[in-house]
Length: 83
Image (tube, rainbow, N blue to C red; front, side, top):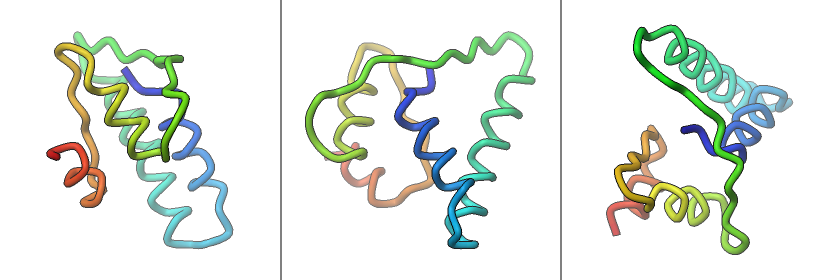
């Protein structure tokens, strides 16, 4: 599952005027495209959204459901999720 808010964040990054942020956003969208191509992978958009907190807190909250995994390269988010 890909939370809608994560997808929106990637799209915002891909459309950014900042070249580094744009590159990261586009790479994230490319990775999602690659995941969709993996056989036996069911990739869906999750419309659930936490009502409070910043983006990182919302992602950790959504991923806290049973059997969910949070996949990220964001070191700050990794630390928050571990906590």
